[in-house]
Amino acid sequence: MSNGHLEKRIYYHDTDCGGVVYYASYLKHLEEGRTEFLRAKGIDIGELARQGTIFPVIRLEVDYKSPARYADVIRIITSVEKLGHASIHFEQEIKRGDDLLLKAKVVCACVDAGLKAKPIPAELFKLKIV
Image (cartoon, rainbow, N blue to C red; front, side, top):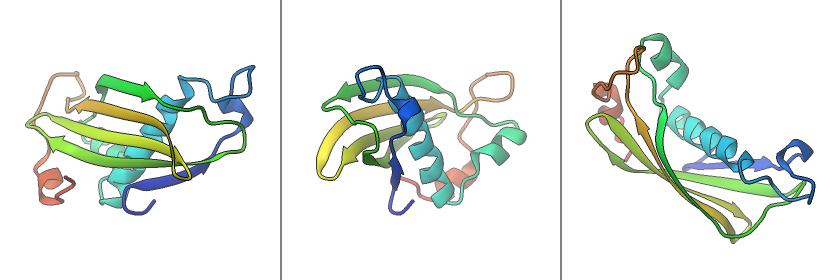
């Protein structure tokens, strides 16, 4: 992961019977991209969860542009569009080389262990992830 880019290979389990990446498989790649983006910024979401702060996806907008296939190497590009009081708004793209495969906007809420909204931890604002 560097500069918000995660590179990975497409495996057989990512594909459908037509040999292309199954549409829902992209969601786990997007999740991995967000997790590694935050990790690169010094944010361990597992540790935050143990402390009672979790970030479930509450909104997802995906535009599929072109399919990926078995053995392709893809790049997941992640950035933060906005850091709200109790939410993080991500923009993500998946590319194969220069070809855009997918664009997504993802909103994650900040909630406590009881799934009640809570403010974003101050340390996230200090890290300037936007």
